[in-house]
Length: 343
Image (tube, rainbow, N blue to C red):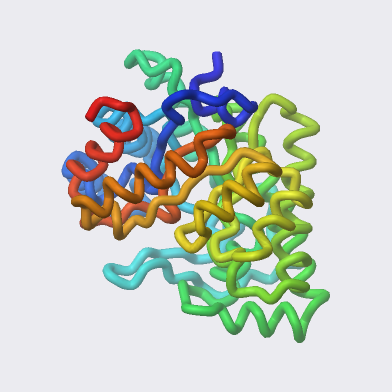
């Protein structure tokens, strides 16, 4: 049975909207830090079904969020394709050279991701076992453009210039990479659905570095293909798109990709979101993570403003990006008090 989150994605308006936070399982929680220490390193945690499911459930137990999201990382996809990946201390992800696309052994892709699929199944079973059967489970992937950015540049950068140059100077090769990723992401998400995810979110974290024509080609078109395939095969599974930094291209993204809901980043004015985007589809967002971290009167004011702005149509409360590691858990509790009318 669908929980409050999925009900909202299917058009129901609740007096108190469903709430979950991007990166809700993370370093701001002491219990997460304890579990991560047991895993050894970040990638080992992602590939350990027992520990990954444990950290997924930690914020559900503590806060009662309306949705759990698979604990993993978007870069397990290029890793599964055979690209070297490590998370260096204080330096973020480091990837090896882009694999030769003509020599990839795609037969190993799902084998390499089998532990992630096992984690999805474990989370769903554990949610039900612990009395959270109404908590929806989000599966996710990075979008093809964002995955390509890391695969070509080899690390996180400010503007992913090497990827952008390759897309312009070697369009045939780059098109093959995007096509490969589109197919792999679609299959990856389908497997997550088969294992128990009943919502999908597609993270296009670096959509905002592209000008409009390239945004349409490398962000909108691949996402539309993924959404169309998933909706044809799993018509009851909602898909949330999060094209961070899309700015005035948010509306076109919402209309052309066919996503069920649109995740809004911190820079989207709530008034614009309600007037222009909420009329197209359900919206999700978009409290500033730094406002959450700071707390106090400004946090209260912003939460109430967002709730009031989006109250007349189906809406999901979330952040405009992932929760910051230095956020006091008490600030999360305060947000939930306001949302749930328990203050």
